[in-house]
Image (cartoon, rainbow, N blue to C red; front, side):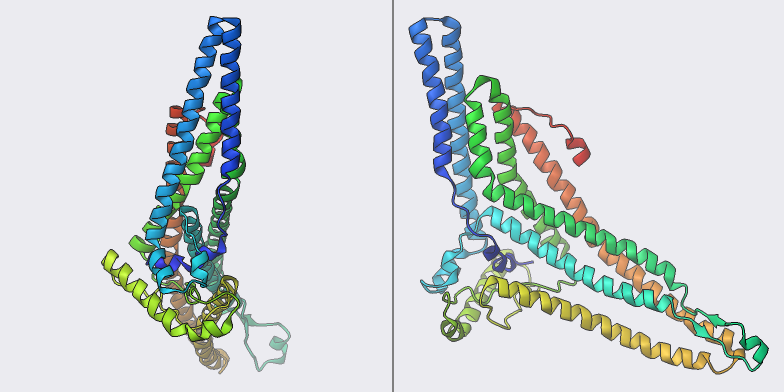
Amino acid sequence: MGITALLPLLFTLTSATFPIQYIGIAILVGVAVTGGMYLASYFLQHPPLNAAAKEELAALIMSLIIVGAWFFFQGILWQGACRLVMIDDLQADCGATSLAKSLSPTHLGIAYASLELLFQELKSIYVSLYLFEMLIGFLSTIYISAGTFNPLLAVLPISVPPLVGLSLLSNAHTVLVEAIGMVMVAIVSKQHLIQFATYVIPTILLPLGLVMRAFPMLRSTGSSIIAICIVAYFVYPLSIMLSNYLIFDVYKPVDMVYVPTAIGFCAANGDPTAEENALKTKTDMLVKLREKWEKISNEPTSGVMANYGTTPDSSTSTKIVGFFESIWENVTGVLTTAKDIFKFMVKLFGDFGISLTSLLWGVGPATGVVQGLYYFIVEEVVIVSQFIILVIVTSVFEIIITITMYRNISAIIGGEQEIIGITKLV
């Protein structure tokens, strides 16, 4: 799907300022330790101490290279993220007081927005299937009483469950719904990892690793922490973006229910009048963005930018409106199907209760209902299971890529290559 669908979700993450002062303090600690080692070796004239001082200098130079490479790749990825969402065109078409001016996309923000799109797709599927589960469970428990003209036989309750076969389908359907719930939990955990990488790694873990590298007895641990920071901050978000491309651009889900609207980017903060007056300009701008993206990708649009309905006051209202729209679409779809099934059931049970002799004749059409729902669930399982399996497989790919890169980076900077429990995690 077009990457422009990620734009509304980028407002859900506030831009984290990179704490350069913490990095500077960590480097100064390394400089102080190295200088102290050289001073001690100069005054004591101790050759082993002089060799240790040279080793500290080499470690300090390596730390400086790590910091320089960190800022270098961060700048490249920031430029790539801006080009990916075409932020320059967005800000140029908006005004100086627009919300778009506050948008500074990063690779972490795009990865988080990719997970949010995936979560919304899974949530829409989960709600729809759960409503169908309620319908199938209800139909499987319906019993039809068989009347009799004999008072003695009327003492015994005689009833027939014409759709009892749906109970097996309901059990199989429950397994699928639970699997979707587990995948949704995994997506939420990925989002927390991205937030952890956004706010905690640059502030705490990276400076801590640089400080620990300044001391010989802690250098291996510090290098391992830095390797974890690098893969969590750079490699893991990029692997999530690759998964987003595989799922939404290569696989292309057939039923994308909820896509957040991008209307509201050019609206001035706290000025509803400006939002109303700028509605046409914003719509034209978004159409231009979509046309540019289509020209780049050379692919037909999948309708992800078709939500030009309302102008949200903020990203929170956009998510709330989109959530209720998705719930409404799922509920109306299920109710329409339930209405058709109910019409057929009324006709079926009316024919079934004509007389006792029509018992076998009445159960026959009921088997047709079970057969129809059976084929419906089979088709549903095939489509939904493909999507779930793709999400799980791409998640495993993300873990494999991240762990492999950790081992390579840790070997380069002198950290531990093996972490206990990695095999179980994969």
